[in-house]
Image (cartoon, rainbow, N blue to C red):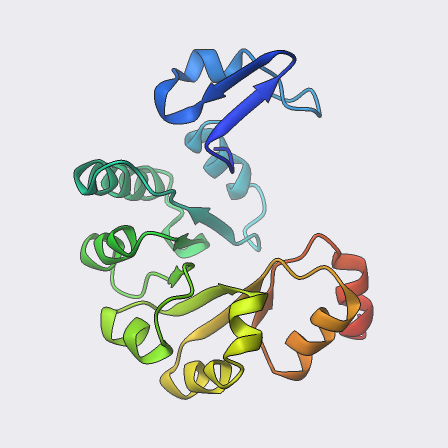
Length: 189
């Protein structure tokens, strides 16, 4: 479980897709912790039943590989009995389509790329959009369109006060931020 396509430590940089679990885990994170496996991530998430886990499934070299990854992740989530605690996001339309196809009905799936309209996302079977702040500010009417269609709206990555306030004023459901203290202050929390 790691965000980017590469993992660095010291003088080594590993491509995640071309590296073994052992090689990745041999390089500690800046915090000194070891990159967790999906099973470890799910077990940690189980410790607080109020926690909602977001799994971003990265794009892969082939649709076949993306399908295999989707099926493996869904199987792990099922095995850990975490279906009701996990939502999925992806930049790959194919990944989102495979989630719609293979995940249990009602699974939350949000598309990240920003190139589909709310209606296209609804028609594809997604439950939300998860778009960059720049995309949303160019298309502010998409928030209301999403809500009218029953879709959720997350906007990323919003760190400055003016943009956070814009998200709040425009009624985004969720805000991805590296500035939660300011976001909570603006929300009156």
